[in-house]
Image 1 (tube, helix red, strand yellow):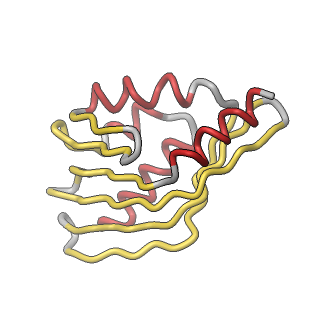
Image 2 (cartoon, rainbow, N blue to C red):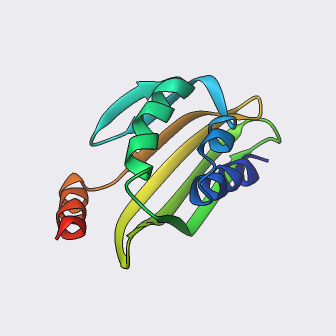
Length: 128
């Protein structure tokens, strides 16, 4: 089921299991971090996420709403999330809307929409 696949992907990210999360992506997946740009393939997703996630002691992606359509192996999942990141004793939060296309039981497209200015404020507040 596409919704369960996306939930498992998010759970793996939250638990620090980036390798496990990447195994849920298609080899040729597209990760479109809309205000920041696109990358293609698991290695590029790893190169994008690993340094970012390494900055934080804990990660939570709280799914506020999630809808899915499709078959067991193929479909689309959309979610509204609050992506939370903890560094030391401080949490920062980023509202995100995500779109995931699932093809043959793997995530073939992952697109996140968020406000870039909110992200920059988040980085600035975390640094202070």
